[in-house]
Length: 219
Image (cartoon, one colour):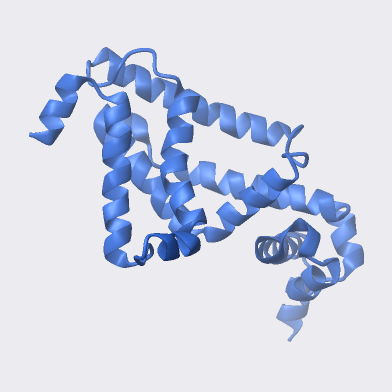
């Protein structure tokens, strides 16, 4: 009992519990629907401490969105794409993003929620700028390596490529419920998900690879 009480009083642990609780509530209900009382109850913390550590509900939401992007970028950086040949690296990135979206549906929900608010919570975030600039730089390096070795087309825009990789998986998953009705198939069946990843991969490769590379891949 004493250990549990000490844990509840630990500032770092309290912050982690509040952020985890806020992430769950915001992902489930959005910024407008989430209630501070519910976040505090889920975190086993009082509202006073929540306000002390994170400010108001909007500030807390900004922290949650930053953390969500931060975790995503950290996992992406851990792929160490620079150690792979360009085609293998882009395939690994496509598979990672697809699996991350599947395993972390709250990430998509939080991103959707922030888009509803026109990104006003992260617009001036230095943390967001730093982590995403690093990612764009890594993508730029990957595309340049591919172009220099003759497997990728030249002068590809790293931002456009990244948006396309995310989009081919993002739309599929955000519309999985209506899509399953419209197209009369279970879009979330295991076989359907495997086919979609294959389709995503081939789509992106056809966008960025040279004709010679595509002939070799398809052979």
